[in-house]
Image (cartoon, rainbow, N blue to C red):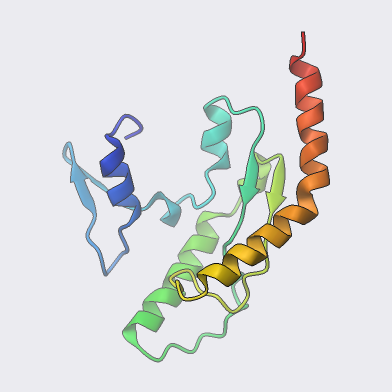
Length: 144
């Protein structure tokens, strides 16, 4: 629920199907919303956000070959598929999409943190001109 305590939302966002259990709150079982709506730009728009920047770090299906060597590998690739499907349609509500190339990284791959941050920063730098134009347009619409 949108009025849940912050701790419950954070804990629920850390659940992984088959690994970490869902969070029970007020008779409901909550899990990571990214499994259903990975890039919730529609919810942000409904909440009244004037400018939405979608930062899509979802690995493309097929970018990583299906070659699991363990149960964790199978779960990781299953998560990749679910997360990509959960992000479909996000551009309908976003004003700007930033999508760094994350080929070679899986959804549950935490080993490349610094490299992923560098890739994200590089992708954002390429979009700064577009972001400035969007902000200028928004400012001119709201200026008195």
